[in-house]
Image 1 (cartoon, rainbow, N blue to C red):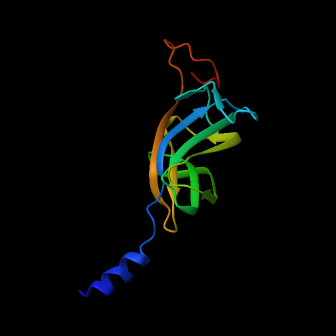
Image 2: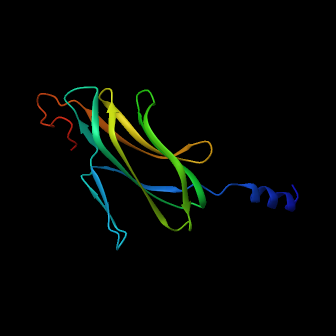
Image 3: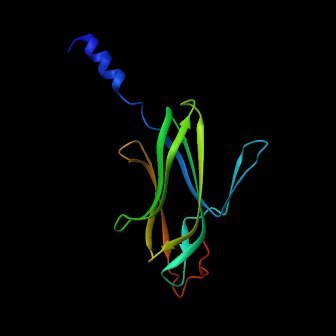
Length: 155
């Protein structure tokens, strides 16, 4: 291959997608307007419910990413792992002004339905083909008689 062809092929490559640093699930996200610092309140990895189907009143997802170049199409979705059933999601452009910056995304979903107990995942996807950059699993469980997880409260 001629050197000119190699340069043209390299120029057509899309920049790499962002790198996901963290995916957090919590009750509340507070952003201080003065310092721009983020506080995550009530972090959890399990949702307890005595009956199914159930609704989780408020599910906040905090995602931190770096390494993005320019405008990127980002999708954050919740799915049931056992059958890849989508539950809820959100998609839109995100601007990365500098690949070294850490960009944060906060999504709040209300009344999230869970048909049955099991493993669920939050996936962060990027690009035209929606490739998964990172995934965060969590469990939705029915407490046993020996467990003391209250109805609908996360621990």
